[in-house]
Length: 320
Image (cartoon, rainbow, N blue to C red; front, side, top):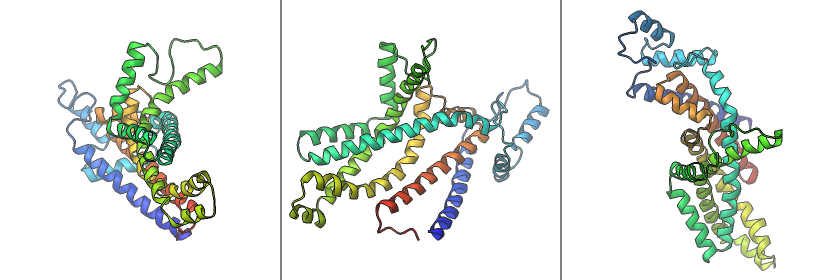
């Protein structure tokens, strides 16, 4: 166990730096200028430009820029190009909103994806299975941002129901409970849109996994012993079908984090995704480097937790 943890820690650390290095070189090679005033603005003196380039290490070659920014990041001195505020302070101010959004989306696609997959496998071949499969394929095929825009067009533009942001503005809530319910209301819509595609993918994986498990010899033995179909289905087949699902969850985490950028921007949700979108538009290299580092860390941590859960569910898997 200790050997596995040390090996996985070293590998994750190496992957983390490789991901951040590749991301940094890609974002610095994209067209555009990191200067807030524009690179060719005649009103800015060459001296001011030189001070700006030195402060943000833009006067150095790209490898040294990366090392200098990474050093400033670990010492807590890395500042955003757009407003000269510490990047960690700006990120930590928005981190709770993004974590609540992603945790809610994960709970939604885990619960409803499991229910949809089990329901489809339980009613194999009839119209209920076909309806569940149709819904899953629709959620996979339709882009999440398109569904989000349709939802905003219907609820906000036509019905006047506020769903953008984190709370309804201009409303005096009678008590704290009403204010919290309003925050939950604004959280559920972006979380649901973010969870649609993983929900559909999970349901298809679980359905296929359960159908494979129902063909195993131990299922025939359970039926020969006279166990009910419900006991066989939910107690035996479902438990063993969760093993490949955990691996799939580890692969869905990067897609979930990537979708946060688009969904938060569409719903005006003030999280890390919206901050990253603004940083891309402003060519804020320190902010983008820090966000890539944090997101890569969260994804690697999620995959590590998935491996631990896999070993916990399946006793045949040994972490050594």
